[in-house]
Image (cartoon, rainbow, N blue to C red; front, top):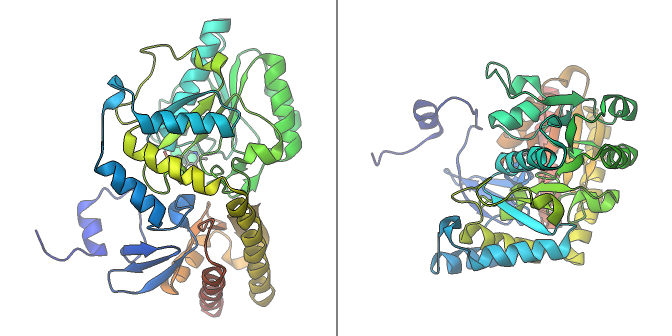
Length: 403
Ligand SMILES: *Cc1c(COP(=O)(O)O)cnc(C)c1O
């Protein structure tokens, strides 16, 4: 049993639902990680937009180890201090008045969708139960969340899916107006579609969605699981759009890699999750909440948030320069440090090829669908690491282009 573990072992013992890269990282520090053989990588992926403060951040290591020596678990049979601190903090710095904690993005969305239905049930009766979502959206991998998500490929073969779900084209105001009626209990949207290809919502689309929700007494739900916690340059993306949701879900960067998620809402809406209506064994556990408290304390500062804007500029400029030399991208887009490069021409449908080449050159990158190379580095990645990462990425692109 103490035999060496390799990437090959993974294929022998794991369900084949993932296809991880060719190496196994074993250590990380800031925006650099090292694999089993000691090779170093620049991390421009951050997991999947998760490690917003990089790896082994000393303040996070300290808060996690302090909490580990203090109290791990109580379940929700008893309250715990870190959860109350975290909820209090989130109510102070966002639109929210009430919190529900979960362990993953999908679970936070599951809570949001259940709450939306329950709220409509309480106030308007059982007929108002349709959850409206956008084409190409992504909301998680549980059966309810893949059903609400707007990508057929994630549902295929898992039918029958829950009823009472509709989809409307992203950023299409006319279609949104046409589909809205009194059967809709909630409209859920990502301010920037992450998995769907790093596509930003038009401000007018979100503003109109807010109006339509008010008009039809439906709840507006922002899935900020990927865009939240500073990723787009404001603490939450809704803050730069100037459109407030009724429910917001956050996960990914919230725990910087320690699993934690939250559903944020208003008191009037929250009332519909009465005692016993919903729950989670691990949700709001002291470890995750202690880490998330520190993550928010560090990220929600003018310094860190301004740093996202300057790093965005650097990264976009670097990508534009690379593209001038290799002409592989037809579009460079995104907000803050959630950046998508649309792969064009003969390389279209093969963003994965660039990702694999990047790994070989010592840089961690991501894809968002078949055509988009996605970058989501730490919000505090040192400029030097960013430049080094861009140089390695350019070498990777050169390899792909030159065969
Ligand atoms: C990642 C993601 C989810 C799912 O989060 P998990 O923690 O993987 O369950 C849901 N919505 C969006 C927008 C995401 O990016």
